Image (tube, rainbow, N blue to C red):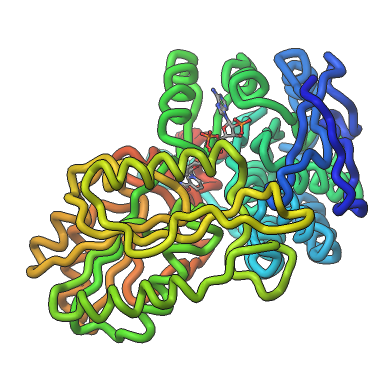
Length: 493
Ligand code: NDP
């Protein structure tokens, strides 16, 4: 076990996180724990079970036992239970939001206006979606009729990252459960607290034992045990591209269904005819919201030459106004990065950018706070220019408050820059020219394109990436299709 030093501040939080298996909150079979650090203080403030294959076996066994009843439950009843779960999250929004901020370092305003409302909405959305999920029939006149059954898969695994902890965890769990599967899920070891609170909410909402099981611990141990388990029929994973590759290697020979939502290096393509003020406002958000730790953040900004200088000047000025500090304070714009290790990774890319010839226009310095935040993982948002598209800083995902900017002249050149990495998650285009917007959207290599906006989300739309950003789609009926198997039944008459 790692050393334990409990900080004083988050006294209201439950300190010892437990696994949620077969409807009960229990420790890991080994009795071992991992430390959970508050990124804004750098102090350990709770512990989580260091689970392994034995815990995953128990969770899968419970899920398999719960599957027949849950999958055959009338959809109206499934709807009611999942919607009650949404109610419980909504009623406890403040506690969830504070827990998310304490665990992740993101500002409270974001946890309480985005993360937790969205987690609630995920359950509400899929609870109702299942009521409208119909299958097809294919008649063969005077001969036969085919109809398609969309049946749940059985026990499925859901593995999510630390950047939007409860938001992404529930984005997987809600459709899996709504479709009639039972779930073994693992949140990131760095941000387990709201998943633990979800266990309690599930108990309060009356979710039958074994339908949802939450196993905490390390990715390479607990996560891998879920991926490798023979009885787990599908894996829905969100995380880094390298981890996705490892998971695909393990799951493919076992013919498991896989949904992989992976990394990104998203471009913002800004044309000279855009609505400048709106573009500036949204580009600042898309660069530094959640400290740049959103897979959909734009980290490469391409600006058409006539407005390049004006943009650079204004953007740097606004970046310098952003206040970095205590994530619980209402005056803070940017909180702490999620971990010391992640802070070091971001700093290593800032150093690399210099070696590669980049010119840092602002930011990149550690922010040293006083008092209880003295050990927190704070850094000023950074803007870099002068880097070619081929360099590592522009090719690799930094996943922090660091953006690069560069000018372009023609639409063709802008598109080549935007499409010039191995990733293809999302892209943002700014122009008032409708024809150009439509043409460019068609040619961008990305699963999601925003025109004159960013992060406007409708949960019914398909969500996912191309190239190294992933395989498969989440969202709306796409998610329900992933979590079901289509079976054709042919009736001759
Ligand atoms: P990781 O890939 O490191 O981890 C994601 C999850 O997988 C964690 O729960 C982790 O556990 C677990 N895990 C790690 N190794 C294994 C393994 N061998 N088998 C099974 N599970 C494993 O990603 P991060 O948590 O660092 O998240 C950041 C990444 O997520 C970024 O690349 C970002 O772009 C991507 N992301 C993609 C999104 C999308 O929709 N495309 C959305 C949000 C983020 P543990 O934490 O314990 O290591």
